[in-house]
Image 1 (tube, helix red, strand yellow):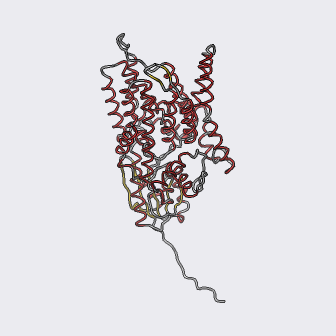
Image 2 (image 1 turned 90 degrees about the vertical axis):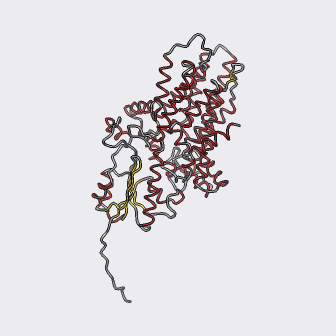
Length: 521
C-alpha cells in the first residue's frame, strides 16, 4: 500500500527532469543496448560496442517501451518506478531492524541524497541493481519484532540477489560477501547442529546468483567470442587497475565517497559524535541487532574494497545501494544516543542533502552526482539545436558523449543524424591532433567534460591532480577561445550554466574549385 505513495513522491520530485534527453552512459550504452533489443530482439547490442553488461535492464526497458511507446518521459517514468521500489525496500529493511520513525527518516534522507536523487531518473543499470540488492538485503535481514526472532526468506532473498546480478555484474559482490559472512558464522557455531544447517543453506542461496551470471557470460562468449566484453573494456575496468598505489588511492577516494561526498559527512559526523555519548540506563531503545549490524558491516566493507579495484572510473553510482545502509546506521545511532534531539539532526542532514542537490562541492566530481547533469544536458541541447539550424550538413568535430548525441536521433537531441569527427577530449594534445587534419570538419562542438571549481575558488583536490591524471584520466579542457585560436576558427555560440560550459566553433574554409571539361569519346 505504500508503493503508490512512494512512486508519486519520486515522480513529482523529479517532474521537471522527465523530458531531458539521455545523458552520458545512458546515451553511450544502456539506451542503445535496450533500443537494439526493442527493435531487433537481440540481447547483444548491435549499434554500440558490447561490454558484456547483463541484459535485465535492456529487457525491462524494452518491455516498458512496448507499453509506453519509445518516449524519453516513459523511460524516466520507469526509472522513477524502480527508484520508488528501491525506497520501499529501504523502508522494509529499516523497519524490520529498528522502528517505523527511523525507517521513515532513512527513506526520506535516501531519497534526497544528491547521488540517489540524480540517479532516480537516469536509466543506468545501477538503479536497477540497487533496487534488487536492497530487497535482497531486506529479505536476508527480515526480522519479526514482536517475537524478536529472524524470519528470513532464503528463496526471495536468492531471487532478488540473482536479479541484481543480472542487472549489473558487480552486484554479485553483496551476496558473495554475505555468503562469506555465513561461512564465518558456520565456523563460529559449528557445535550447534540446527544453526549449522541454516548457515549451510544460506551459503548455497547466497552463492546461487553466480549461476545466472555465469550463464549470461557463457551466452555472451558463444555469440561474440568475448567473455567480459571487448578487450579494451576489460582492460580499462579490470586488468589495468591492478596497481598497488592505484588501489590504495582508490580505497581513500571510495572511503570519502561513502562518508563525506555530497554532504554525507553531516549525518556521519553527527553519528560519530552521538556514538561517544553514553546510553542512559533508562533508554529502552534497542540498537540494531549485532548479527544484522555485522552483516551490514561486511556488505559495506566488501563493496568498499571491490569498487576500489574494479572499474576504470570512480563513479559514485556504483555504490548506490550502500548509501541507505550508512544512513540507516546513522539515524538509528542518533535515535538511541540522543532520544530528544535526533529529529533536529535529521533536519540538519536533510538541509545539507537538499543543498547538495544544487550547490557543488569544492572539488571535481562527476556531473551525474547532483543536478549538474541537468545543466550539461541543457547546454548540449542548445548547442545541437544551434548546429541543426545553422550547419545542418556540417561535419562536427567533438568528443563523446556529444558524438552519440549528434549521431543518434533516438537520444533526443536532434531529429536527424549529424556527421562527426571524434576526439577523446579537449586537452591540448587532442586539439593539436585535430589541427593536423583541418579539412575533415567544418564545425566544432566543445564542452566541459567534467565539473571542477573555477580557478579563483577553493579546490580541495588541486594537490591530487598529478595522480588523478595518471590513474583516473584527469585532464584540462581548453576553453572555446583557445580551441578557436589553435584551429583557426570563430566562436559562433557559447553558453555557461553553473560551471558547465559549451561552445560551437565554425571554420570558414577557403576551397579552391575548378571546372574540368569532360573527356569526349
